[in-house]
Image 1 (cartoon, rainbow, N blue to C red):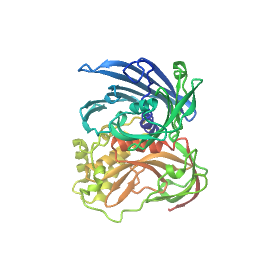
Image 2 (tube, helix red, strand yellow):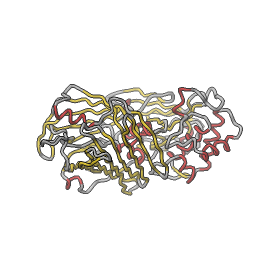
Image 3 (spheres, helix red, strand yellow):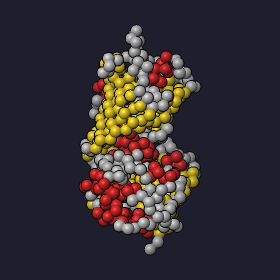
Image 4 (cartoon, rainbow, N blue to C red):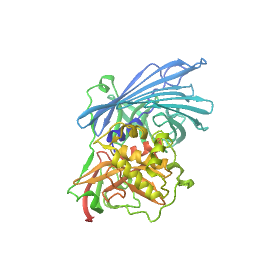
Length: 494
């Protein structure tokens, strides 16, 4: 799986509203007109910056609104080439700090995603445009719909005290979806901000659906002066001067593999691999999930013994199409996996003909993807299944996405798997597919494995909707620069 795809999804979720409580008699609870600057540090390197500027505007019906414009820039290096990930977000708020409008422009390595959302009573109308495609959706807003900004103001005013928490529903434009957030307030601490000591309240912001946890520090003006995602590249965002924020940046170097202490035999021969895993500042059991093929046994000081086995053939196979209600999320078309697209559906029918047995159908789809897509080392841009089919080339992410989408078009539940795959003396970040044919079976169309070998170490999965894809990216991104592996033992066949 492309490390850039992991990072730009995960890092795009760093943005929090960054405002200050007003000292004046203004009816607005936050200062207007000031631009705040922040430095983004990743794995100890100054790799990006953020800015936040505000002004007062009028809505179409004359209502005065607070407009907050935020920009996030992160530099990364892939294959020695520096690249910029740019996130521009403009949000309009009413005086009670309820958001009513969002405009997002996300530059994903040359692919532009634009999201426009507007509140209409108790609904949110969201329009997403990317790669020449336009999608409109209506989201019902619950009664607890609000913003982090309103909570920061409540902390500054003393309405939300240490030891208390507030749960709200917020809109996350980067994934065009609602999420449930819980913000808990800790006891005040003294924090150094641009050389000055400030009394700040530590906050723990938990995003339930996306699975992200952010630690933020808010001063007595309601201004976020620092926040961290320790589990993601040890990300740190700190308030600095404009000159410090815009100083020369050190791109985050994205390694595509984890080195082993010794080489493994040919990948396709591996039937079982046993590894020792350690992680900097984290417990391995929190990074690597246990499952049908892999066991994770915690050992000393956060380390773990991981045993991975080859995928076995399915014991049974059902007839198509699969209609089990509990598998519905793995059959739906999504903006990423357009399984209802006429071209994709037509191709699935062409490949399968009269085949109605799920496992044989899955193998036929796998074989077509392997034979017809040109292999490239890395395709850093996130693209859709329809684009993959049009260009007929890609890395592991594109192979996996197209197979999973064709499977859904044929009535086979599918999901993307992100993880690590062994090749000689390294584990490479990789993506493959899991299909349900009566039971879940993992396949790798990039490496031509209808049954994945024991070198495939699973980290996360996605149903290919925006929220679960972001969650998969975050869960995979937590291992970047932190996870180490060594070989305890292995078993291999002929």
